[in-house]
Length: 177
Figure 1: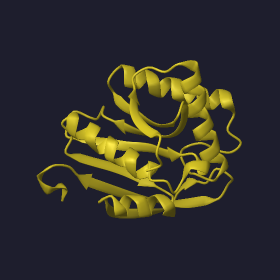
Figure 2: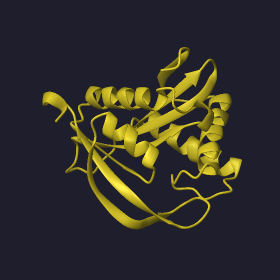
Figure 3: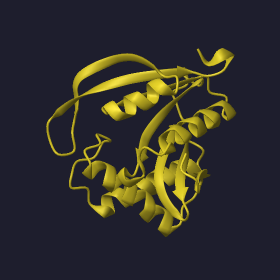
């Protein structure tokens, strides 16, 4: 990973941290990432999203991890801990985002490892995620995730057009099989 980049959990966020998270989200959506938002993504909408995420982290419903290069947030991922009563062993990995100018530096992989460590700490034994990114698929395969299936035309790309979504899972503990 790029020297000087650190990963940490946010349980609350300053205005500067919210702005940094919004910058990463807006950059990724602008670059075509299918992460629930359409382009153009207004800053106030991005900020409202992150305020909601931070509120969930403060309540213990999710873990919000950020990658920082100095004081700048350059990546993020969430671990959604709050699950239905019959799935207390599971968490969802969501919104794995790395600013385009910081890609290919090991930040995504570091965020994945930190999310898996947070899941273990929370007593989770199964993680799931979905993606519409071939670049992300390479990362998930490299870090031990297993593809479970593809749903065609699942979502819209931010600039328009349907895209397939690929689902992955990863078991934690007992050899991480």
